[in-house]
Image (tube, rainbow, N blue to C red):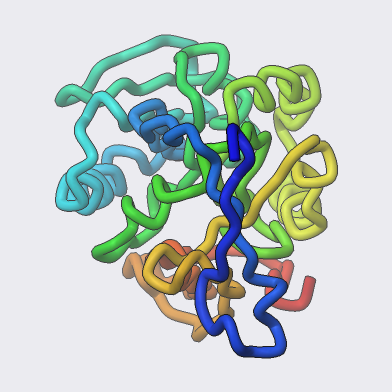
Length: 248
């Protein structure tokens, strides 16, 4: 058959939806996932309080310090600093999670960066879910939810480099406008190629993110909305201020 991919059905070959599950297996082995970094968005005010807990969870997943990069936005000055083996980029850019996406391609070399928050909580299986994506093709963006209505997900270095001038304009963006841009899948619309992250334990099937209860997860007196991403074993806690993110 030469270099022609081999086709087979992932599962349920007799079902009516079998044709939708046809897989093509390229002859060549996929590239390893050792070019994936974990890009953590934090801020000057809280990173010292939030990062230790998240780092413990990342290390428990077997992710080494050199694969973790932290962007601390809203800093007084721009500098690079290594703290306990983890590279931190202190940035004067102040644009919430957009600052991490803006700084990452300027500071580091990588194939893909998984954007996450310093307040995220991860569970066993997280790393496998992130690094088990289809490596036979080059992707700009692999969102963590099917409609890409949040910024969590994998981004290629090339994609973030192309977006860099636009991301720079998010400096001082309001929380409300940031959530609106996030919920409207602004970055997905700018991607040339995209693939939703699937659940590695369910044959790669995607799962919608789920809105859950209000909870004061960090004992600050301010409740946040819990959003569960079952496909990647991650919980996100959203402080939306006057905006109701679940209504967007």
